[in-house]
Length: 315
Image 1 (spheres, helix red, strand yellow):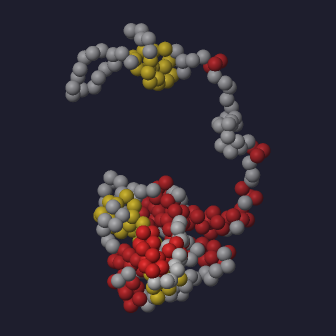
Image 2 (cartoon, one colour):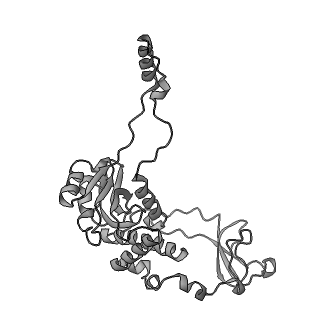
Image 3 (cartoon, helix red, strand yellow):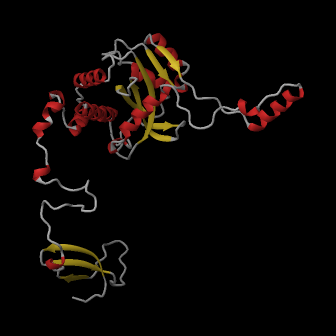
């Protein structure tokens, strides 16, 4: 076999043999077939040059947080058993929950009620916030896909109804081409189950019109539209107004006519936006990889169940 000067990618076949592709190969051209390259065999590096490693040795010695715990450093599971309720022990695996779409609505309801009681709130919420998030889809196929012209996104929408603490009460996944004014009907159509005290909603300007009217007439809810602040007045216009008033003998500071600069938190709207951020912390929720909308809804509930279980365990 020909001897080569430089080697490229290396594969280890056995303990005493390694195979590497050579950088230089024949100049033949095969347009519609596989190209055979010369290969070189060489023995692996001596074991003496590599440091001895035990199963309990730290994988990353530079970062103390990323190392394996030794047996004496591990805490027994019995120490944490009283802090984790038995309900959380019976939760199904996320994969099983998502693929079977059997979400255990009763268990999620009890989790939310217990968490709200820990926070000093009534178990049944009386107010909620509604908003949607457009997510891009992958190439796995499936129905209920469309284009959202407002967000310039091709995919699906995740419609959420959350309480004032940001916990998901109801989730609905549908095509992104469905506007928010129509999507609220798909979301709240079956949301009355277990939400008998729900009486008030905060929504954004996308729900004004028929969306707000439907929620008030069909659901009997009071709906408040939280609008964005108006665009600031141009400084040149404010200076001209102050100059005209000065001619009339009225001294006006034009800078007081300008709205405050910087970011402004919209009332209650930030709660549901924070919930979307919580859900996006799960890598599976970065995009919509699912073929069915029901599976996407299952992953939303699974992400929130994980969050609620962790909060109850740490309380």
